[in-house]
Length: 145
Image 1 (cartoon, helix red, strand yellow):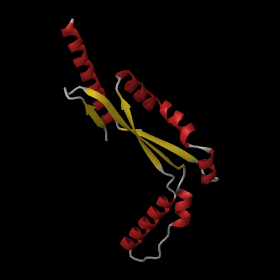
Image 2 (cartoon, one colour):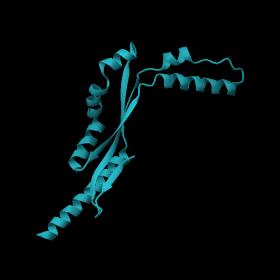
Image 3 (spheres, helix red, strand yellow):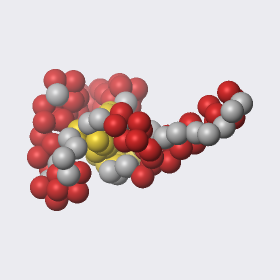
Image 4 (cartoon, one colour):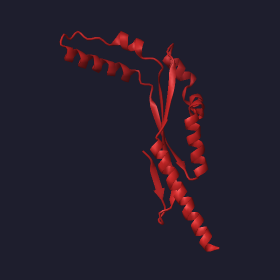
């Protein structure tokens, strides 16, 4: 979800792009195999119990996430951010920040991976509003001369 600020004359002032960063274990299969079982005989009851226990195991293994709202007031910066996201450069840069030695120690022998997401609709809406804003600024500048 993106937040868009506008001035009184409707000009876009800044755009918040929501960046979601989540750390998780690279592999869950062994934890699920060891921690999920059911003694229910009815197939439907068994499935519900297995699902419930698997959900509990996965929640207990949650390493956390963070959501950042990043403000953009210049189109070039927004486009550079989006290009870095698409190329994977943003993910690589964030790994050094989020996958710390203490997180690695907490994970023990299990690997940790980072998931990064930015909504394309947020980017496109922010880009459209910044282009509109630049167009209005250019029009006002052109009418003053």
